[in-house]
Image 1 (cartoon, each protein chain N blue to C red):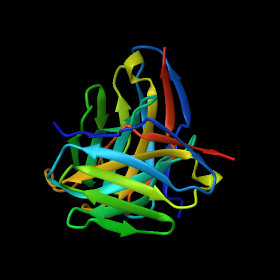
Image 2: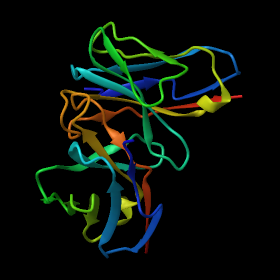
Image 3: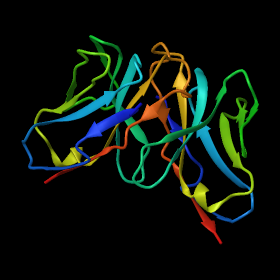
Image 4: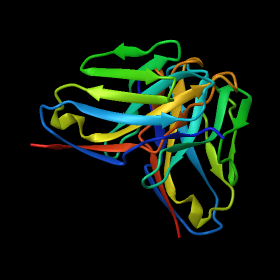
Length: 114
Length: 114
């Protein structure tokens, strides 16, 4: 069935370094891939998305890379800051169902060392 | 705009009790969804709605009912609470399908069933 998973459940990064969070997906028939950030006690917040016909998309301090050959998605955060501490989820919107569903992965917790 | 609001923030139920989790949005969004989030896991879709009067099941619909009589409101009903329904529940809304960019989440309801 459809599933979106993550390689690592936790990631510890030195403040100022770059962070890379990885995600593997199994459904080839997806239109959009999305990264969400969830801070403690809050709902998920949209960070960046990428359409399936793209390989790379950049935002402010974040870059998402999509490798459809190996079904891999990554989120790169440049110059990681304490405010980046959160759980990060990848998610996908499959074509099936009229693009009305968003399927989430299990999340990676990012912690920042001072 | 208040965005997506959820009530209550916390709730404790006894096994077998019923209750309704409230969700409202003031952004005139057509699409609304309910998710549950268990410890160490991603969000799983319970039910969703693509417009007033239209609802459909997600990944884990058993034990939950929804209705969508207005664009603004999307309540989630637990018919007979079970300990397995202990979770954090998030409501979300978005204007249209196809992207995750415009999906907004509420602050969540933490439910404990004893």
